[in-house]
Length: 99
Image 1: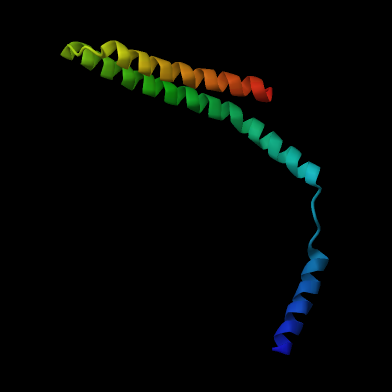
Image 2: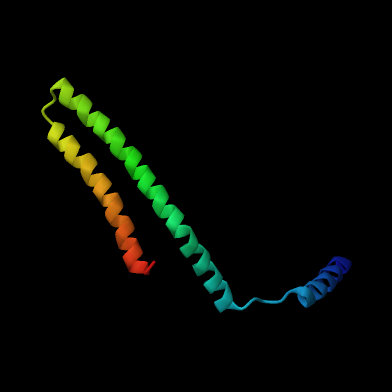
């Protein structure tokens, strides 16, 4: 048991000599830069998803309209509202973070 503890201490001493802490501010700035660089691609992806969801919603509303359902207006408003919400969220996030 004593040999194992001694081995752990020796390994710990050698490992501590090779470990150097990085500057915290540099790491945070690097993460900030990377997240900001991904934001444009994420925004485009959100717009693409919104377009696909909008097309699916338009088809569903058209099917309800052709079937003569009475709640077509509610469904159309819900799909349109969700697409507008997606665009507004992206705009607010851009403005909030100054991107």
